[in-house]
Image (tube, rainbow, N blue to C red; front, side):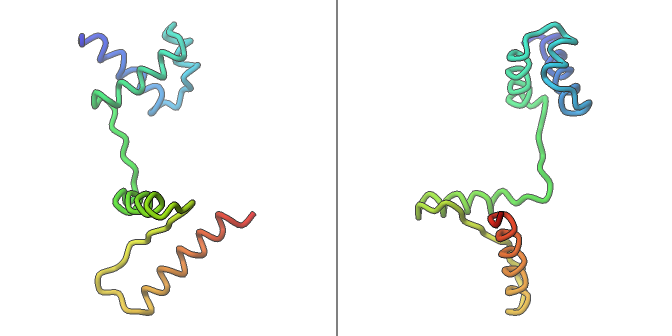
Amino acid sequence: MSHNRRQLLAKVAYLYYERDHTQAQIAKELNIYRTTISRMLKQARQLGIVEIKINDFNSDLFALEEQLKQRYHLKKAVVIAGEPHANHQRKEQLLSTEAALYLKQIIR
């Protein structure tokens, strides 16, 4: 891949992720089809030009939730992080907090 192509991918990614331009705005500005912009953003991630980091999210817990859902054919599974030296009361508090958050999501 040419240096110019990588620079263009980086520019598109910058406008989209850092400047909050829409794909349509970027397409108009750079005279490129919007569908091409979408593919360019994907390619920028694949090439490591863009790395997306999600804070405050434990991907291991998410993976475990997904495994539980698949294995037991569940619509929803919630796994919470424990604290290694937590006493019974603290564990109940963590569970209660997560249960309350889940109920807020499902009750409409």
